[in-house]
Amino acid sequence: LRDLHLSIRRQRQMCIRDSLIDTILDWGREEYDHRGACRYFLGQTEKKKLAKDAPDLLRKYGRKLDAVVVMPTDHAAVITVFVRNRRN
Image (tube, rainbow, N blue to C red; front, side, top):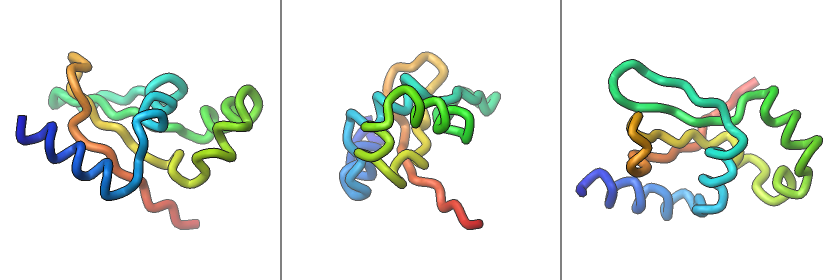
């Protein structure tokens, strides 16, 4: 229960909406860490597909699409959400 409150607080601190999390879960890539968690994120290929199929979502969320959603492998709840720092 403590982790759930932490993830909600972190989500609010970074202004990440539930609709953004749903978008990442629907369109994103799934990567298991072999320790009981699964990360969802939009890679370059997923962002290209999103730009082609739903450009309004790309404009709506912008840089927030670099967010990573971490969930347990049973998909019970969101453990945490964070936005990756992408430096070129």
